[in-house]
Length: 354
Image 1 (tube, one colour):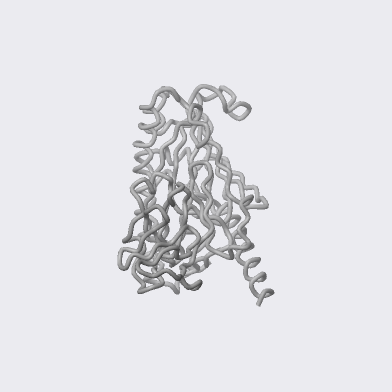
Image 2: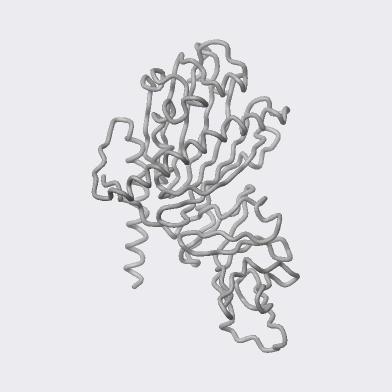
């Protein structure tokens, strides 16, 4: 495996374009796969995504505003609807058919705004990742965030598919004992859409974050269940209960449990938008518990950002250097095989069409 082996983009797939909350203040400018986009809600409240470039003089539409008919270009006032068609030109009655900008399929579901960057005719809504926890606020109260990381998007997938880093990168937060991590039981199962990576840490000391959340006083049985859904999503279930109470047979016991959706939407070949949402499955009737979970977890995401950006810098500096694999990379390679399969299938379909 070479250090500069950044995966190309899979365009015929659904990616998170934005959280709905990001559109509350109007228009959102966001680059995805090198394409500058403007994301907004039309007058009916429907989310839309257009190329961030007016077809008149090339001004960014994100510098405009939303009106009754669509988004108004802030340069000369042309108005575009959610399909990309120009619906108004000030002082001009006739609008030529070619007066339009590129539009991208957008679907809003389960409090997530998804976008399809490939062939619009192939946009299959049944392929959108299912994340039901956002629709169960009483059982799974949640909080979301996003920021940009200066690394190839697959580095985040690699990072999530190898939890041996927890004891080192996150040693002060969710990591816990390095010895307990080294003794963890790992399993990897390849699936049609990616792979499942499961990890058990039996009779291990609780990390600081877990103690603050539910007050563990002794050893715990702790699990991590990560499902990689190619190309860019990982759904995580974490939990722990007091050691010796049968966690393997029944995880739904009093203790700690939470869900996270991780998503890496490529911005460029060496940067991505990282979306994450934490859903709290304990003390659900206490809003402060969800806030505490988020506050305690957020620094771990920043720790990932630091290490991934440093990794990308080294890769850029010495692209000729080889990397080695170790035993804990089994899930990483399973994930890489899944995305390689998608890339090859997309390439074959494109070649056949041409």
